[in-house]
Length: 124
Image (cartoon, rainbow, N blue to C red; front, top):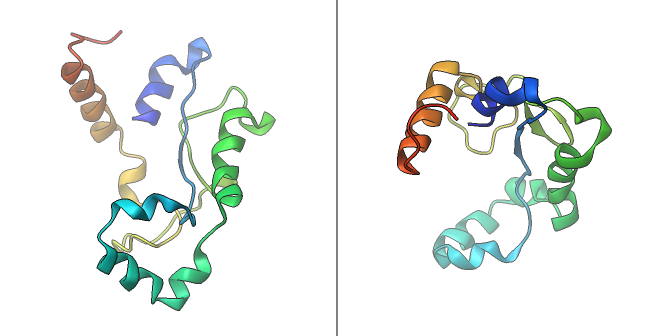
């Protein structure tokens, strides 16, 4: 969605960036099944990957106000930088961007479906 927005409006100064803040230790897990949370928290490798809330917010803040991303968009960020190519292995805890991250056909489909859902006909 962000890529489609950036392609359509980047030339007008409206930019969008996709990002992953990382696994962040917040209280959001209160909305998950407690057995699932216990299962995740029993994985020592996964727990070591968790970030503090400040660390988790860093990539979002950088994308929003960082000078290096001023007048730029249409990229996928993680760990405060543009993500590198990852493995297409369906590992939800993997790093990097994957095949579907940059897929103009599906981005445009999502864009058009979103317009339809909110009752807007055609591009704005």
